[in-house]
Image 1 (cartoon, one colour):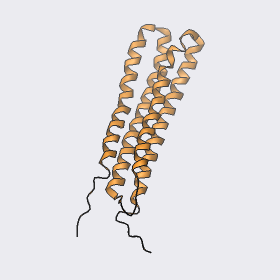
Image 2 (cartoon, helix red, strand yellow):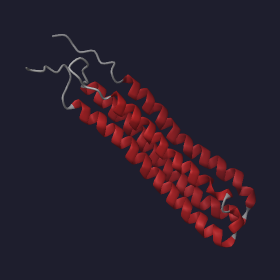
Image 3 (cartoon, helix red, strand yellow):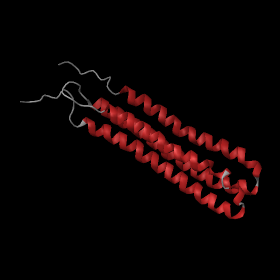
Amino acid sequence: MVVVWNGDQVAPLFGYLGAASALVFSCFGAAYGTAKSGVGIASMGVMRPELVMKSIVPVVMAGVLGIYGLIIAVIISTNINQTADKAYYFFDGYAHFAAGLACGLAGLGAGMAIGIVGDAGVRANAQQPKLFVGMILILIFAEALALYGLIVGIILASKAGTAVPMST
């Protein structure tokens, strides 16, 4: 019995690369943001230990970046389904790959921004408490960068499966 595939047999590779890219790059950003902010919190905690819990905000915001990557990775991986009845074309693989890169690289950039701002912000907050609101606003704008990547990733991932084969 011979099974005839309607789709491209290599196309799922790109889909899986997109899922992996979303998770890996977002987690790199989350790890960097957590580590860099954690160093600032530890340094600040020596001078003002009562502010440590208030200064956890950058670490929490960095951790959310990994969740964004996880969401896109799950969306992509559940939509990669190549069977004899349902084809998975290069268009679908490229759409999933682009979705993963959009979310993952946006999460990496946001994590770097959150880490740098979190480190400097918690140290500055220890010296001047009036800077707390400004630090939070900057962190929110940095987090928004990853949210943009998540939104674009969802839009790109939803385009997969809309390819129509050309008739010959």
